[in-house]
Image (cartoon, rainbow, N blue to C red; front, side, top):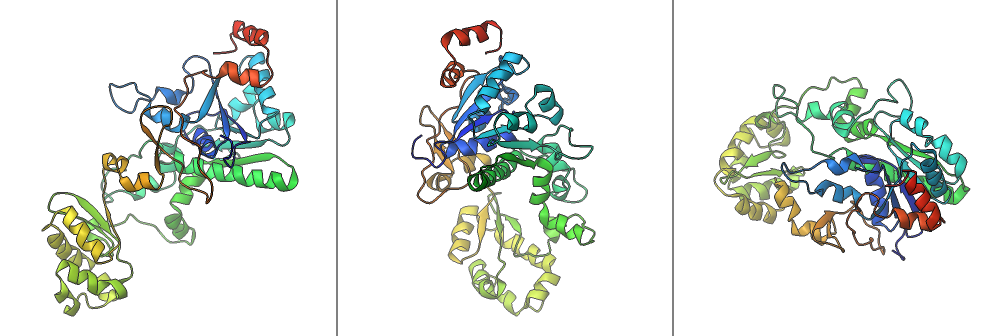
Length: 398
């Protein structure tokens, strides 16, 4: 990995599930050497989450486990903790999302590890933050990011429909990006001061940030109610519509003075320019329901691909509602490096969501088996073969 921006960075991923480990994955995309700490046996519980009923292929694990080396050690064993402390002594970053009481019990809290290595960046991920009565609570993105922050409530189609479930990792991955940003900021501070320390983020804080527009409205004292259904949207020109073939698209015509005439010509509704109900921006807002109904009739006369060509030619900001299958095959996503191939096996993976000018990301490598790199990592840390066998005999290693 020489030549990547983080090629000299040593990272210990002592986390589980998604939000913490995914921050380490981003570091690995830019060349960091990431050592994944897992309990012997089954390893990280995220490994055992099959995404397709009836299949055991670890598709999801390949996403957050890629580019890492797996070290299987029992941290409940004193000898296992000693191994971790030895690794921490020369590490740059340590990442965990274990509950705070578990960290104290295992002696891997920030205080424990910064005492071993004061230059260490301790990347800490929690569900609800690190102070207050809820600091020790466990949580997943579905509970802390999605449900707790108003997002789950606000995306209902109508106020009467059931709250919508989140997609797996939908809050974890952006939260991981925030933790990555905190870690990199801490590394920058260390470059200036020589000081390590804690870089932390939480699912709750990131969910509030994601729902920031509505939460900010409430913070000014306004009562935030559910958004109206699509047929009663306040702006018919920033709405989604169904085409003749049943496909949906979303358009966002926000610069009406410049775009409206071209849009009306493109959809064959130039007569609306002289209709008093729609002649001005204020009138269109007031009569948005009627305009939505008219546009529904028009868009139902052609298939999605026809409307795609027409609206793009008219300069209308337009987005087809893709299925996940289509998103995974999107040529544009592969062209920009959002989806990249594994260099050491079949298949593709989703890359981290940014690039640096002049920097090439490390080629994606398949996720390791549990403990696949245990011996190599320990040898690099200075353990002799006899010491490794001793640890194995004690049951410390997987």
